[in-house]
Length: 328
Image (cartoon, rainbow, N blue to C red):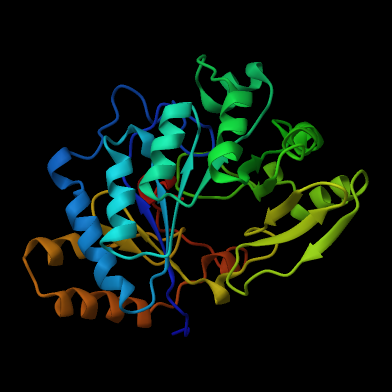
């Protein structure tokens, strides 16, 4: 067992998405024949709020709402509002592909209490957007970026870097986003799930990206929390920083403080898990708050997963859960 602090929960509110990103929900798998989770099996907002209120008592202070695409879930602003006001969570954020963001939606989310938005941004090239995201519909990126800065002060972006796909756009993305007050993060292409045809040759190590960006911008290290998944660097003469999430080349399992809640109420203690723990079953049996708390505490205290650290030391034959289901 590994002793790990629990502070952070990522919640997938839907397994549906309007994109078909090659590294997450490739169209070859997630097509018209794919069976999504039935509505009656999905956690209700009331169940999510109740669970978060209970987990707050043992240290939960930060939530990230994910999917699929979370903005496809109706009245998501109401969930945010109650997580802040009823569950009392200190920080509630959201990751989105941005395609459904409008000025009014951004204003609504900010008014509900949302603390920050992270935009998935894998390319600036419309032609590559179709290739990477599997959609021919393009939104007004500049409007979304300035809207996020307007309502949330800081623009946060995530870019999954894949060799020979978008690695030649790294500096272009930095050049564009660094004109805003921003946090720009680059993520090593990860072997999440079984459908994204992952192999090591597609990875661009974070160290290479650091050297590339540092060749144009003078970078200075920013001290981060021990549990942070990224190493951050300030870009000289800008109001921006760049971060690198290096779960392939520099695993950070020992300091992991997060759990993941799937759309149908299974708790996962690792992004690369093979199975989850059905906490929804405990909730729907109308068990006491203490029983729910004991269930979670038991699975968290016994966790020993460290997939990223053992990935290349021993083969894992069991299939991993898909990112769209677990919420990344």
